[in-house]
Amino acid sequence: MLLRAAVFLGVATASAMLTGGETDTPAPRSPAGPAPAAGPGAVGAAGPRGLGAGLPEKSYRLRPMTAESPVRPPAAKPAVRTRPILELPEQERSGRAMVLTFDDGPDPRYTPAILDTLSRHGVRAMFFVCGEMATDNRDLLRRMASEGHVIGNHTWTHPLIPSLGRGALESEIGRTSEVVQSCVGEPPVWFRAPYGAWNRAAFEIGADLGMEPMAWTVDTLDWKEPGTGAIVSRALDGAAPGAIVLNHDAGGDRSQSVQALATYLPQLLARGYRMTLPTLPSR
Ligand SMILES: [Zn+2]
Image 1 (cartoon, rainbow, N blue to C red):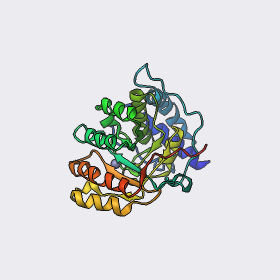
Image 2: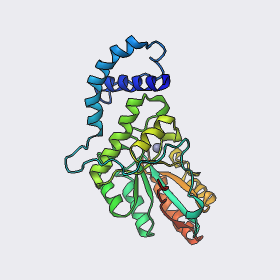
Image 3: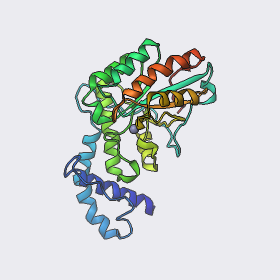
């Protein structure tokens, strides 16, 4: 009970702080921060202020950005996990199935070429987009969806999740789902934490918005710009039934990532691998 109260107080405090501004607002204190000093009096003092100022802002966050695309609550929320999904389950690995994922975009300098390569080989992939990139490149989100790719949520600004208060994290994740929904008509059903840095709040908020958490098994380390050959080698060496491969289509100079995909994808296909998309775990 004490923990619940502390978390609730943290949410109210964070929500109240968010009303003061948007991205300029300093990160709220940790929910655990004010809890020890907060007796009944403190709760009573924070309550009306926090709730009165906080709830309108919070409900604004959860409303669609345009009237044309209402946010529908998920029919059945996924269970709150304690670890992300790393690879395809056994029953989805037939035909040497693998999954390609691309994070941090979309970026008009690189994402179109990646989409072109995937299209040339008839391959569908997952794009974990950042809201701040997505909102400026809505045409690319629509192209992803129309070509059968899956759009996942990768937060709005790519923060280190454990450094955020709960209200800020809710905003990061919720706004990104809103942008995806307003662009392509459906909210994302997969979520990936930046840097693979998860915490309990991330699992809870993701599940509440109808998303499953997905990580990866093969990191191409393309974001280090190690040279096209190094990226190709890591993708080929890591290939295995059920593998989930991490690439990036934004966040820096991704020309090596673009080149590497064009090189390793046909080689994986020639080796008998099949690029696929995961199915949602049953709820
Ligand atoms: Zn990322």
